[in-house]
Image 1 (cartoon, rainbow, N blue to C red):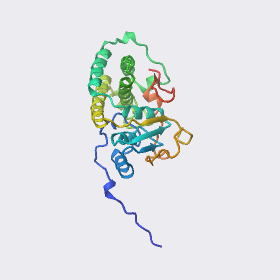
Image 2: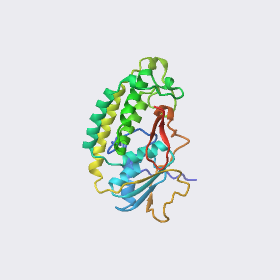
Image 3: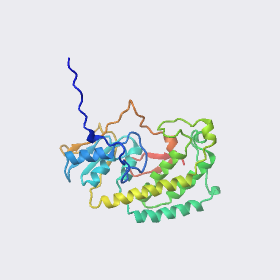
Length: 279
């Protein structure tokens, strides 16, 4: 018996490449599709104006690359956080407008007094967050909630969500509930507002790149739902399916609500799912 060796194409190796261009780096998500791979597949197998479907769209890598390459696209995902991230990442906003709202937001956060706030109540909040962190997050979320323009609010909610993850007591780099060891936790004093500012400023720069790159580009349609059911996608309307299927046996995709928090906001997805439930 002869064993055939697989012939590998080294040109598909993107190790060391910047995978956080455009708005790809707005928020962490497990097992994200490499943008360079998505872009190459889109370029190889589709043309401008074609319709691309990603039935497991995650946080929207294929949708974002399709948009800047002037392809129509539809993304589906069962995870409400994924659908929300995909929506925000593919909604271009004038960076000058974001800068204006950003400075107003920072000033507003500074104006909110702790005495005006009520501590959120949800299971194990004191286990996953330090007391000072809880009030800082509550103050930030209160200020973001005052923003009336939905796309602007959603943009800053993504920065807030990433901040929540970073300032929680969860072990660094984990997408599952693993608390820091006591010796590390005792020294853990996150500067919540500074972390939010760093994330928001980085995200505004990414949005500036998208804003320029997506002029006259079609906007993706994002569906929060089950791709195995009838989602009213017309027969023979899709030119190409490009996706990175979930690796449920290898990666944990259910990002715990307790880490994101229970922040009581609805996001205008195709369901009324409340992503943040308590803060």
